[in-house]
Image (cartoon, rainbow, N blue to C red; front, side, top):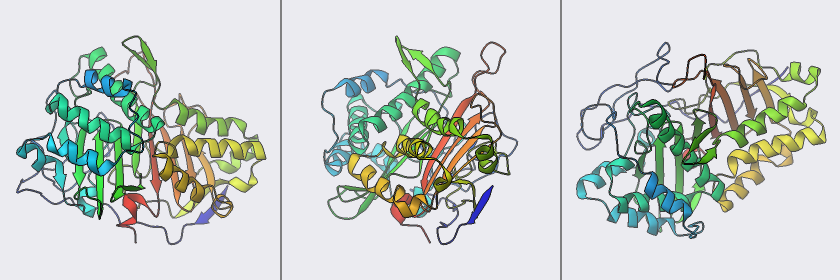
Length: 393
């Protein structure tokens, strides 16, 4: 196993989140699945949507509107996100605007989570509390801010949560419990940020005017791995999962031993509330120690995340991540098990800037003998350009 010291790429740690708009706030759980409270911690307060209580009330489904926007032949890719953001804001009441809009500060940007709304609050307003007009405008903005692949990732994760509430009857999940917030003022000049967050999803997209400059941190996950809704089968994390585990499957026994990370992990390392907390030493097998075919598998895995960003942003990032210099310092590591169905299985790609993780979790909704299905958490980070590099030391 090779290790490499990480130098000069550490971001500041997650800070407390200040109260906005005079709310008194309350503490909340750390970022792990709702059933996992053994390592819970508290984080400082933020303004809470609807007052000083957790955002756990059931919300109306948004699936009908989501399907309309998804099925529309208007791609939105390449559209002016500034105009779409302001169009969305124009559909809101004054009270809703005050809940959606925040200053673009480190405290506010870092306040996101992958937990259900009954476990931890997040910025913004629930889509299920908005009018159909507002939901449609919000989804059009999301569609324009992501690639076709990225928008599919977002919508399939939302559909997974609708499946959970439909299949189990539990109301802490559902398509209406995804939140939208805008940090800063959308304008042709100056930076602003779109934040969409819900169970197993966090999109943090920063713009300089109408140009997208950052697509990370991004959290994606899904429970169950595969599900059927309205006659269609979905697997939101399949491309990411298969990308990572195809690398492991290609490794020889000696390569697997070299790639194995010394620690075991219950979750992704640099998830919510973990800004900048990358490992000090890179572990695993170097990209340059792989065969040409194995290297192609690594590049394919990287693209499974990065191509969620709009094409211009993705191409710029891939140019940086896949440069000869960057790849010569990129490590692939695994821990726990090489079988993704085993809880504790973990895979990581760690480069000078790029950080990708996938971790296999115990089922939360399904823990019986009939359906004991592992599910996944994944995170994509950029050590230099999370939040457009605004808060990177």
